[in-house]
Length: 476
Image 1 (cartoon, rainbow, N blue to C red):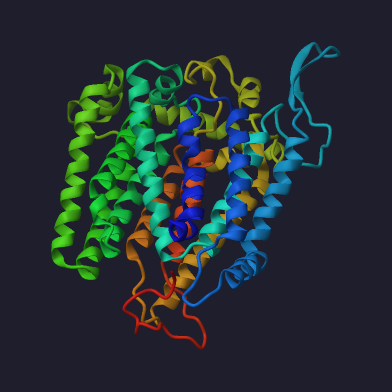
Image 2 (image 1 turned 30 degrees about the horizontal axis):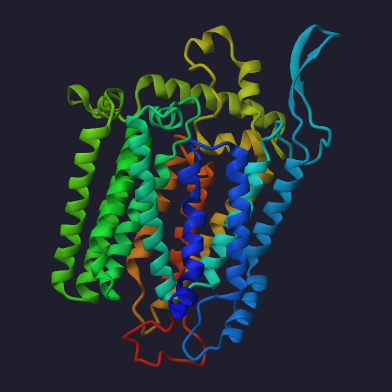
């Protein structure tokens, strides 16, 4: 038991950190989510330094020194540190709001006290700071402190836990719990959907299923099927139709790569077992949706396919999207470097929208719909560059390690790499149609998967060759 805890303890805590927002976001307050994220990040950081995964013939003291040195040598760590600093500055400069100008007798947007620092509306910076700290801990741990077995345990745990969250959300929606019902309506006013995270974890679950047969964890096949089913239920309940279509395509691509890998790494019968597990998951999804889905949900999800049409984006949606994008463009031109502040776009809509515009816009429009315009309007070029720098660093690591793996005698774990590519493609597509990629749960899910995707390609260590002749991986 002590050896098991030592090997998988960090991975288990990281899985809880990644999935916690799915359990809390629809029901708990923002301050409660932030507090839990800070505490879990602290616990995971302690595990990182004291119980990292060890390589063969490596003492625990040597592993601790290795992960500590790798952390401070990693450029991505310093990028995250800079992002955390920017988030902290924004937290203490969150006083943007509406004020009445008595000289001209009209309302106007009150500027922040520190004009040359990142800003936001009151109370808008805490969640971003908590998200930045959680991302630092989660991504750096996935990059440096998890071995092969721990990585597979992590992706298995997050997919299963997310599945339980998906089933819990469906039940809450059935019993008309306000937070769950509101999330299931997928309002375009916010254009931020928690179902995106469930789509990511459903894709991860397929990769975990293929890997479980390779290391003889196949007795838990029913648990994997249940986790994947729960994630698909969450995707159906809490994501609009176009997001569902995006992730079903990602799921199909990952399934083909994963089952093909399982047939090669194990034997051909394993591929058929994986297909049977997926069919079992789909049966659970169909049963759950028929039993728990309210009528308005079925109507909303099937709307694009009524009357033989295949219109994922209706005319009303495209009008709202174009109008909000034009507002965001004007706002960004007024403050291109730092933006107008986190959470200020709803205020800018009030000032820029005319009576004709409100005939098109839904009540309480709070997002620019087009994700990259929303980032530029509220955070400016500084915020956009800081966000893109993390993505670029993870993608570069992925590509470099993929190229190096060509010369390695060790077979990479292709299912996670395929899942990372498929999910990244969904991210790129979604950024043109909503702002879900800015959600805490989506950032934690996507960033950890991209980091693990790069780690699935085993780098070539200079002066060292696998002791097993390349049949197995060189990491624990």
